[in-house]
Length: 153
Length: 122
Image (cartoon, rainbow over all chains, first blue to last red; front, side, top):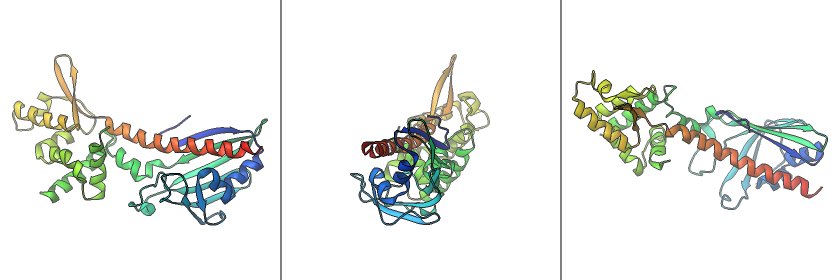
């Protein structure tokens, strides 16, 4: 899998026509089946889609995305907060990542390319990245620590 | 990967530090040690002599402070010939990797469920 620090990419061959894959991706009930989330209403570009995770152990987690593109049988995308599983954390102020599903017909069915990008803006990743030595991250971190130490003493 | 280290970054950005962050903060709650970390924060490796120069402290005192940083897994020593060079610990970079791996793995699972969902009814 080609992956850089800022993006995840997955390619998967499916033995079904593109039209079938399209409905599995964009029909909110079908999406909910394989993604394991009970979604309230159909997907509409530009609008929030919300639901309750049904994945065992994560039933307390609310799933929320903003539907972006719906270009029939070609591109389905949404923005969301990846791995937003801590109910104590308010993810709404964080910059979301963009998830894109691209479809292409193949001789045997469909090729689905999934990308998730924008991790450089995700605090959970950035927080850890702040420790990187080569980009001055430590400098900022030191200011935070100094401020903390000063306030604690 | 130490949970303690993860919390330093989190605590610094989120305000109140969890209890387990205490050892790291204790290690950094000292002007000299903060200065040492600042000195190493560009990724350079420095010998004790280099770190002593300009610090207005004895080699012995600097060594003692480096030991504290080492114990807190903030810095570590690497051998270079006969001397020890100090650098910041690269473990945090691996943690970024770990986070992406986690998200990536979730997609693997979701897509494999999508595949069986689609192909099982064919």
